[in-house]
Image: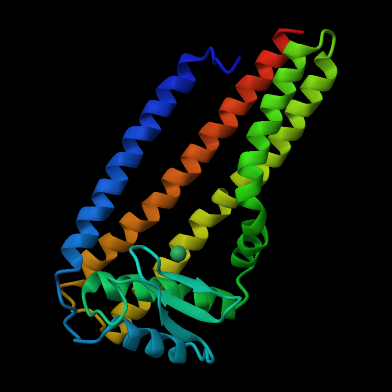
Length: 240
Ligand SMILES: [Zn+2]
């Protein structure tokens, strides 16, 4: 039932898969190399969070250690910046880049950046809609198979599933520029305040860029899922 009769889909799926692996590997190696390079300023990630927040006149945000890898995040609800094992109190260029990036989100929040607000609005629904959309489309197809002459209803249910999944797609679409912007703010301040050396800034930029690429991959795979759902809906119509 879920057989998708489209070579283009399979070609795209392979391309996205290879791209995803390349991006993950690139990020891992850049982040790992950077984590062994001490920032020329000698400052820790925690220190630069304080400096960046006060430079933007943001007060009342606390820094907390969140054990684990890649657990760094800014939580607007709690007013906290969480830093992971490799960032918290560390003074490598990777730690500085990651911490400054999270501060970039705090700045977006502080200046009421519309696209950031929109992402925050979509965030709670994105996860549920991602699963629900796919299941609802599958349900529409199933109905078509199980009940004769259910075509219109099945097709309608498929459309409903696609509409729900579009919320997830929109979330990823909005996430990419938000993430790029947070990195841009981080890069600007790192350069301006000299948190990393002039000879380190290029490498730091590459780490931020590689992290940003993971969101481009996420957007591409979401687009691919949307394409798959459209193909599945096409199947439901053909078999009426
Ligand atoms: Zn981010």
